[in-house]
Each structure stands twice: as C-alpha cells, then as structure tokens.
Image (tube, rainbow, N blue to C red; front, side, top):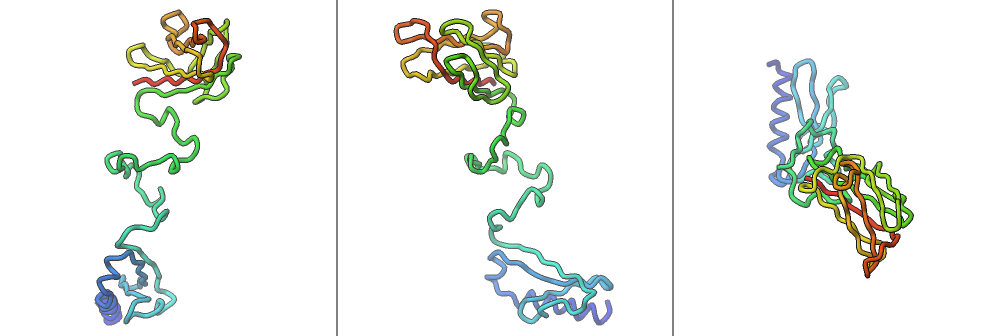
Length: 207
C-alpha cells in the first residue's frame, strides 16, 4: 500500500471513529469517495473529513444504514425477486389502500375461485369480477354464465342477496339442471313465495 492509500485509509477510519453512537443507531446517510487508481475509500462530510472528493478523478457515492427506512424509500427495484414471502408479511398488514385498483385478479389468488356479479331485474349484468353474462329466461328465473368452472356442490358456496330486502333467493348449480359446470341459476321470490323479477348480487367462492 503506497503513502496516498495509507493516508486515505487512516482518514476513513478516523472519520468513522468521530461518529457518535447516536449517528449509528439512528438512520444515517454516509458519503464517501473512491480512488479508482488505488482502490481506497475515504469519508466526506463528517467531522475530520473533507467536505467533498479531493480530486475530480475520485468517485463519490453514498449509502444509508441504521434505523427504520423512510416511508416509500424501498421499492420493487431494491428487492430481489421473490425476496418477500408470505412468512415475512404480518397478518392484516396489507390493506385495500395499499393496493392499486384491479391489482388482485383471479389469476393471482391461491387455488380456488372467487367471482361475483350484480344483476338487474331485467337479467343483465351491471357489474362483475369480469366476463360474467346473465339473462332472465322467465319471471324470477335468472341464468348466469361464469368464466370458470364452478366445481362441485361440495367445494363451492353460492351467496346471493336481493336488491329488494323482502325478496327470497335460491341458487342452483348448473350441473343439477343441465346448464353446465360454469352456470348458475338464481330464483327470485317475494315474501309469500311467488316468483318475481328483482335485482340481486351473487358471490361464488370455491376451494
């Protein structure tokens, strides 16, 4: 090691020793310069060190360590692929406000299925999780076609709620009436059991 690199190394050590304990326990940004010709590094902008690189050929750089990273300072650029796993995420720590609209799709969910649709009294689909169609074939009888197979009766739950609170709804899996495994029939009745036309919402959850 030549005299120049020795002096720079001693300067770096002295600058680090000059930092008090609070600087190391709190989050701190450190600045240094690298001397390409000798591979030495020296601190800058700390007590006992230069305020800037001593020569134009020296390369300035910085790093942050200690404490808690500032909000928003860690992005997907800083994370290695697959570095964040389920085991590293606290339960209930990810809230709706943390997710972009439409970010969670069926393809990103664990095995199983979740689909939903809002259907008008005329049988058209007003809103849905995507690709669901509907029609009213008779008074109080609505046929829905989903984008995925609904599975068997044993591993899927159908939850329907009426737009009009007094209406009673019944759901029938397509396989039970020859409608296909992606079909669902919804029957709507009034409070005394007479078939009526009424809007509703339906959710399909399968394991």
